[in-house]
Image (cartoon, rainbow, N blue to C red; front, side):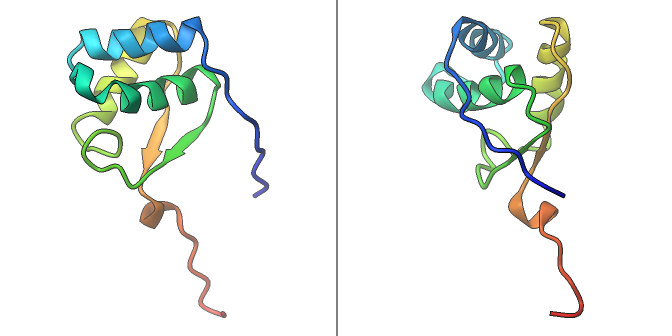
Length: 93
């Protein structure tokens, strides 16, 4: 699989989606930057977020809430995983 790299922009739709996450109380305003991380990835059509942030991003209870807000705001789902879930271990190393 080939990864495509691009820099995502901070823009009005990302800020609006972040606010929707905060309004839904997925995260408190104290963690608005984590909500913004998910919002920017979502509006940039990223397929996956890979993060070590288990408290606010890679959290079993929060992922469906992010995606519910995404749907309500007209965006698609985003997959969120820890690095350990996406590593490909080859037996023949």
